[in-house]
Amino acid sequence: MSDLTLMALWSRHKRDCRPIGGIIADARAGRLPGVETLPTGFGHRVVDETAALVAMQRSN
Image (cartoon, rainbow, N blue to C red):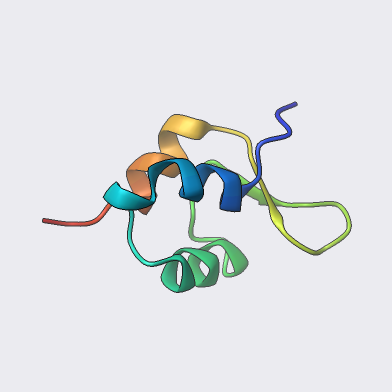
């Protein structure tokens, strides 16, 4: 299982991604593919980097 967090992935690609607030809201609501909530209930882990990046991208 990957130890990549949603924030780490966003930080690597923030230039091409939507603002983090909307991404976090989508992750909390379960609407962000490739991401799951950490077992602690705080934060999110990336389980499918490609799917998560596609969902996080800006729509141009």
